[in-house]
Amino acid sequence: MNEKLKKNKILSVIFLIIALVTPSWCGVIVFYAIGSFFLLLSVSALFENSKFFKSRILAFLGKESFAIIIVHALVLFSVNANLFLYLNSLRINQSVNIFVNFFVFATASVVLSKLFSLTLTPLTNRLCAFVWNGLEKVTPM
Image (cartoon, rainbow, N blue to C red; front, side):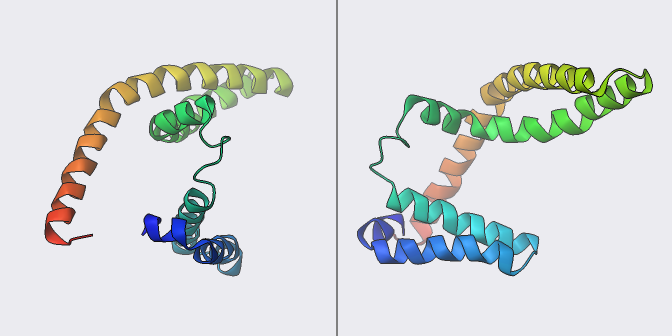
């Protein structure tokens, strides 16, 4: 499908419009997922040869994004939520509280995302390759 989008820029633009309109049209989570799918599909087709999207920093973030996404919610909802409430109960200035929480969040996120990327990323890559190879055998593309 992505190859067809690369050749047909009009379809990519239509998908981009669908991606931008879908979430505001209906506030249901499923439509957010559909809108995100169309957004990723159209951006990858429209900007395939963009130097910006091939930059080293974005390539690094793309590689690390799975671990960052997993860690983000875990750290915020466990460590940072409890730390914020604890420091707030000690009547620590809110600006200081936020600064401390950001520092703890950044440190914990880096450590945990490295740990997750060393363990979960290879596992999910193998699982995706297994599923993708199985799908290719069943349905020719």
